Structure formats: C-alpha cells, structure tokens
Image 1 (spheres, rainbow, N blue to C red):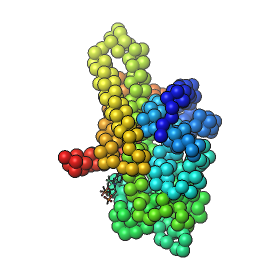
Image 2 (image 1 turned 180 degrees about the vertical axis):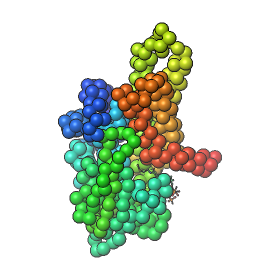
Image 3 (image 1 turned 135 degrees about the horizontal axis):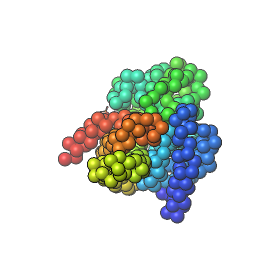
Image 4 (image 1 turned 90 degrees about the vertical axis):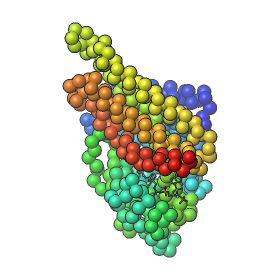
Length: 386
Ligand code: COS
C-alpha cells in the first residue's frame, strides 16, 4: 500500500503549508488555552489527516509507512498537541482493526476513522500495568453473547475526544495469552472518563482514565473475533507506532535546531552574534548530526516495514523499530536540552518556543514503550538472533 508519488508530493506540500500557515501561528493559542481550535480540527479533516494510514478502499489516503513517516516528520515541526488530535486515528487507535479485524469490523469502523467522524483511542495501560502490559487486570467476563468489562485504563490519549476505544482486557488466564482486544464504543453504559490529567507539557493533548464498571460489549466486538489474540495485536500496533513517534521526534529536533539557529544569529554578546562562537556552533552541529542520523534510521526501518505484509510481525523489523524509538526520542531530548542552553536564560521562559518543546518532548521517551522497554526488546532480539 502506497500513494502514487505525484499525489504524495502534493499531499506533503499541502501539509507543509498547513503547518506553516495555520498550525505554527496557533501554537500560542494552544499553549494558553490547552485546546486545539475546532476550526483547525475541521481543516485537518478536510486535508485528510485522520485517514493517512487507512487504505483507499476504506476512504483513507493509503500511505505506506515510509510516506507516513515523512508526514509525521513534518507534523513534528509544530506543537505536538496538533498531531495528537488525529494521531490515534492514524496509529494506535485504528491499526489493530486494520491488521487483525474481521471484514465487517473494518467496513464498519475504518471509513468513519478515515473521515475523522469517529475518533479512536488505544487503551492498554492501567494503574498497575504500564511497561508490563501482559499483566493487565481489566476483566472481560462472557455473559451470553456479551462480555462484561470491569477495570481502569490510565493515561489514555484522546479519551475525552474518542467515539470508541481499541481496549485490551483479560478474557482468559494470566499473561499475554489471556488478553483480548475489544472495540468499545465510548457511549457504552458503564464506561466513564476520569478527570483530565494535568501534564508537564503537550498542552492541548487530552488524556484521562477510562473507567469500566459492568460495561457490556457484544462478543462480536473482539477484534478479529477470536479471544486471546489481543496482546499480539497490541504489540504489532505499538511496533508501528514507535516508528511513527521516531519520525515525529526527528521533525521536532529539526524545529528546535532552526529556532536555536535563529536565536544564535540574533542574540549578541561580547560584541557579536553568539552564533559566531564555536561553542554555540558545536551544540548546533551535534544536534544537526544526531537528527540526521536518527532520520536516516527512520527511513531505513520504514522501508523495511513496507516490505513485509502489514498485519504480520517480523522480530527483526520490530527490533529495528525499537532502535529507532530509543535513538530518536533520546536524541530529541538532547537536542531540546541544547536548544535551551543556546537560548540561555531566555530558554527557561515560556514565551520562547524552545521551553515548550523541552517539556513536550519529554513524553516521547515514555509513551509507546519507555527507552528501557526498547532496550529490553533490542537486547532480547540481539541475543535470540545471534
Ligand atoms: N509483534 C507480534 N507479537 C509479539 C510482539 C510483536 N512486536 N512482541 C511480542 N509478541 C508476542 C510474542 O511472540 C509472544 O507470543 P508467543 O507466546 O506466541 O511466542 C507474546 O506476544 C508475548 O510476548 P513476550 O513473551 O515478549 O511478552 P512479555 O510479557 O515478555 O512483554 C514487552 C514484552 C516488554 C516487549 C511488552 O510488554 C511491551 O512492549 N511493554 C511496553 C508496553 C508499552 O509500550 N506501553 C505503552 C502504552 S501504549 S501508549
């Protein structure tokens, strides 16, 4: 699956213009009001951002992973809250259905996901199951032709906007094989949302708990119709999501480099622009080299991703996606830190964009698997394959 080159070039130009002309000027509004304006959400729908990764047969744009990463790079160049509005539709919220769903589930859900009429969110994490995802406790008990769900899901991105969740719950015994993935409509009686999380950064991104108290969901809502496959579905979805986040990290790193270079050209100390000092140049040079190394890795892994069937997992590609997540999210953390350093005292002041990016990028090393989980996945595969 890929969009033809000419159409893709037009899309990429449109996205770049949209970011430059609409999103960057709205960054201050998002920071101050902790929300993305509705007219911008509508424009995102009009451009087709909600359906980037959904095949054309379901009304999406049908980008390949390589193409999606190029768009994700561009989206990384502005406040990350914008991407999060449709990020779960493009990635973790919808891809489980696309990879493992029944034909009926795909026909029912994906066209609405692609148009943005339905926001899908991904609910795996729980108060006591973060990195150890296979230990999740939310229970799904069969009762006739329904499952009854009880438990709490935590830090669920886009939960307040979601019309439905891809939600992992335990239908069987302990461990990964007892987990199933459900499509849970947000208006299911017994499902309610917790209070909004107050976060360090990414203002405008919405997260909260999803609480299930005797929430009845048709048994037909198990993704793929077979219980016990949900952990694998979640892992495949996360492999893909980790690559997407890596591309976003590279885009944000590039934006921070550009903000820092602009400041270094303007700011004068000791009688000249600070950019003329080699210690400032060294920080810019390290950041630029690391960003380009990360981006080269993302491009390589996304090409490999496109060579395998999208619903199949390949341990070597998963390992490489973890390498990209590990390297790129840590890299953008270093780039943001240098960005603040180049800005000096101004880098600590909210008015300057670099202070926001510094806080925003901190999350990238945590969600969709911490740096330490990526190390664990890489280490295990290196030992297995060698
Ligand atoms: N693709 C497909 N299947 C996968 C897979 C992948 N990437 N990774 C694991 N699996 C399969 C395994 O092959 C295994 O199946 P079999 O028993 O048939 O062999 C099953 O899933 C269990 O895998 P494993 O034994 O590796 O599970 P662990 O409990 O050891 O956990 C980690 C593995 C740590 C990798 C997993 O729990 C993880 O990714 N944790 C982080 C979760 C996360 O990213 N959370 C973020 C929240 S979402 S924003």
